[in-house]
Image (cartoon, rainbow, N blue to C red):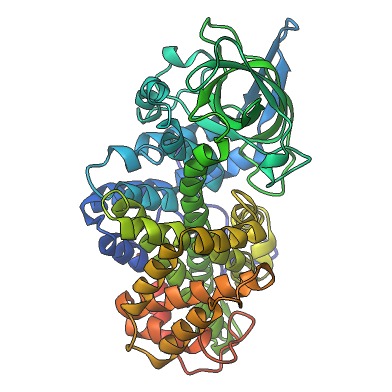
Length: 554
């Protein structure tokens, strides 16, 4: 298709003072903070691969696919034309194209197939994919994260692993053995319990002798099933011996459709191009994964990995929102000045840039800990507590961040033809998914009590920056003081986690970030009276250096 220039000279007015589309821009090579984070995390060997994918994610073609996928949300097809029940979800071709793009780039497989820094590579790939179109990230995240849970049942993992790691997208509805590649979903939540999965009522009855790796029949209702078009679902159900983990495929071993009924698709605020559903098991075939009665312990390893993606997602949204705001304000003028040159706007943009770089630094440090955990107990302990800390904090920061970037566009930011409204609706999702804020804070407290060495590992990371900045030293001391026995209880958990997150971000920037960004972060986030709105900055910061670094390098 040949692009034709639009009319800019109209009978009533000329079209001027409008920014060019933020398209055909390499989202990797133009992002200095991302490049440095990837190198720092040991994934520099993958730079060429990331540059290639960054170009695809930032292309006009991908932007067009994202618009079409969101304009044409999925449709539930319960029955075929002949009245036979099929329980399938139909997607617009644009959604399929985006899934092809992400899976074949290795978003869901790279962590397990790359020879080095696999989890960091996965994080960088999905960081870029989320900016291209975030709705396809949900099935990719779960497909990536399912393997640690499946590994509890080696014979089942051996059957599914080649298809999970194939890097192929096959949307056809047929038994997995006939497909080039598969995606895996999750169905845990029930309406009466929500995050309290022990309140679930779904029952599992053994078909034969029962036990790990054996067949069961599931009966129950799941209020949220993420990505119901997946080829199989990890799910929880009660046996006589307690809550257990199961893998329920869409097709039974004898080639019949499994008794998994899609009741309705959720009409969601955001993530509209992706499907989420209520489902029912009506004697559905499933295989037990892991030890009977230890289902939460089995699936929690999947949740730990999906939470990594719940950290990278808000960081990616921040970068996308910031890049669009910088681009718009650099190409639009008002009151005889470019917007980006006006003092108030400049403070807002600089403050957003500080936040975005701090989020990127935190994300990739945690991703690195996933890679290092395979060889280092210390890294595993750090990952255990830093992951929920990061998930909580970045998701609490991203919604207002995206709104502020939207406001920088003026009225244009509120118009559905642009990316900002879609990004704004997407931004609250990852705070709720895989544990809402309060659930995550309780998990941090749980780690402190059950794995106290994780706290030592966390502060060991902070100690590496001690002495570099007095404001950071005070923040580290404050975070440590808040963990004094007797002071930590559920009612103050949010403040404790916030202090830990800010200290960690500050430590990473002081050690690895550019001086202008590190100094500004400590001045505006670790001071005694930080401003509550982005741009409400009392401290003198080097906004010129901060904005120049954050500006897409095109």
